[in-house]
Length: 301
Ligand SMILES: NC(=O)c1ccc[n+]([C@@H]2O[C@H](COP(=O)([O-])OP(=O)(O)OC[C@H]3O[C@@H](n4cnc5c(N)ncnc54)[C@H](OP(=O)(O)O)[C@@H]3O)[C@@H](O)[C@H]2O)c1
Image (cartoon, rainbow, N blue to C red; front, side, top):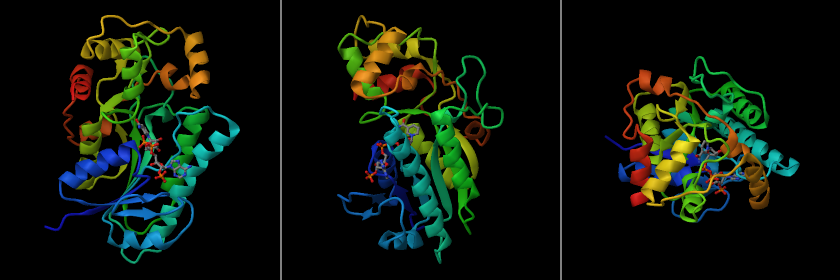
């Protein structure tokens, strides 16, 4: 059987490279849409206009759109606009390009975020019963999903990826937490009771493969089934790094520190309690169910 071609828009970043490497090993053909092509099979686009790049969609079986300015920045008006525009414009133009295709992709997976759900300590947020929130990040996620859902495209099955923090070796949230821990600063952040929904990078890629191979469609929470807490996560990272102590961070320090390093404290203060109801109901099996084994695996190699 011929292997599928997957095009990853915004695939030059952390998650795109995780997917590229995973699917490449499985023999898939991978194209990346990027504003700055660097490698073979990178194609140039500006993430908002039609162009030469659209021809690759004719030979694409699966389109995955990850495009978006990182939310790891201060929410200035200029940054907020970039965060919004990069997600909405890229999704819209991909929709238009698909509408123009003679041979459209069979599936289109568009990134979203599990941050779309309200802050929650006790209630577990599933795709069906989760409470959708109403702050800046949640409203971005709602607009992102709305534009994706409202685009009428002739063929592809559409999948919305409400993804939690992805724990990886070479990028994402684990790297700064490891660094803090190595400097003796890996204690709990604020009271540490905030829930942390997470997924190991391998399970992130495996879940995408599962959605494609099973011909599924709809909204999926891409998270491991057992959220941890901030306090326990930091404890597990300290243990994996053999660090006997870790200074904790009160809320005022997190707010000040975030300002100094140009990010937002929301990223660690929010309680994310999200459950992968639809993945589990469809029979997906996680390799990393426990935070201990996920961190041990990512830290040791
Ligand atoms: N990492 C996580 O744990 C996580 C969790 C949930 C959701 N997400 C979402 O998943 C997506 C990918 O995450 P990631 O960690 O791989 O992010 P990343 O490393 O920052 O990569 C994002 C990609 O988007 C493109 N991009 C950035 N700013 C852009 C702009 N202003 N206009 C057009 N394109 C722009 C970049 O491609 P070029 O510069 O090559 O054009 C970049 O490769 C993001 O939308 C993110 O919000 C990530």
